[in-house]
Image 1 (cartoon, one colour):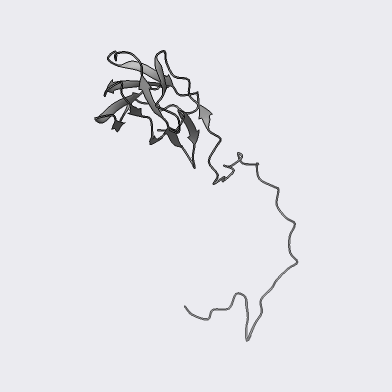
Image 2: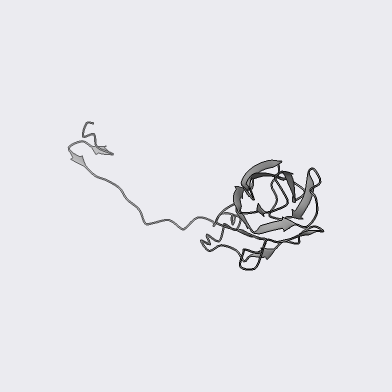
Amino acid sequence: MSNMPLFSNSSRQEIITGEKGDTGATGAKGEKGDTGSTAPGAWQNLTLATNWSNYATGYTTPQCRKLIGNLIEVKGMIKKSSALVANEIITTLPSGYRPTEIMLITTWASGGTSRLQIEPSGAIKLASGNNGGVSLSFLFGLN
């Protein structure tokens, strides 16, 4: 870049500066941002459908909570005292803890695995597994 003067007056260069101007108007206030909390939310108890109960003393109670961002944690170990009915509702997630699309989750079950279906209504259904023991321990992101 060449050394060109800002102003030229034959043989001399001078730079003209003035006083600092007033501060401009304040812009519009933006929306409130995320609190940035890194602590998980409180556990919310899940009410089980008829004939479903906690697996046994000492096992986790069916509950859910929000983790950081849109991550939901569900925990619990349950069993059913009667025969299974295909796609029956085990429990329902509270509002604010529900996916916007149907999700399929594989978890532990007594004697193998179980397949759970989580619906936008909050319904958690047992798609396959057995009544001897079903784990509700899983994570999913709200989409």
